[in-house]
Image (cartoon, rainbow, N blue to C red; front, side, top):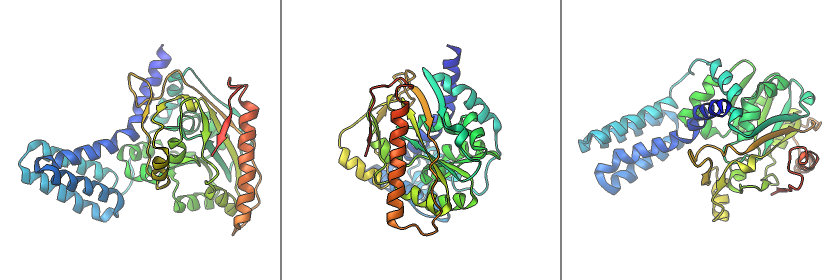
Length: 354
């Protein structure tokens, strides 16, 4: 019981950091414009979209617009909401970083796993080299439980990698205030959470640091269905190109039990896949009934690291090169799944690669 409550506390420390701030920002913007009616709400929400899409130097102007609208309404609640929206914007606009806080990693890594019925990190950990290793985590799931519990906040994984950067969605990393603060506090000499945009990939892989990444991303989350092992990979080839360009060794990584963490809305799949293809998460999920944004505690999070795939270094890989090594990677992922599903407790499971 104590382990579960410790795990719950750890999850309440990290999960709200990335699921609550976006709603808080747009909610405060809507409240700021509410006294001015429908047009006011639309205007402030459009300002919120602009805050996410436009350069940092323009953000103060949009905040001033929202503050002006709120002040002109003479409503205290609208003014307070505008101040909150401005503060959240400031958190992702400021220069510099907050201080590193090792206690965050120590606390979460030692307690978070107690939230689940079982967790484990297994497989070819000894095969991970101290540099130029790419770790591809599958599936993404709704909130990346395997990537988080057995990767980002797992001391054994980080020790096996020696030094590793976890790459995530750039909007999440740089425009979500809660997540950005958590990422800055998390950083240490042997680990960091960075953005997975093209400049980020090239910068980090050019340095040779080990990188961990979830290739399926939001599209994986969109096809999520409780109890079904499925991941999107056939159209995800950019990471293979980078591995070839920078001479990286690729390890497929699979988490059994990720598909049990949530129940999700599965309708309107074509529309949601189009949105996900444009980097818009189109997922409605329900986890633990008491706190639905948290995963289901009954879940198992069992992560297996596959053997490394030795790839040649090709400065300018052709499409044929990318296709060939992408096929090798996909086959290795399927093999990793098939060879370990019985040991993980899912002997009849089948992996669907889309």
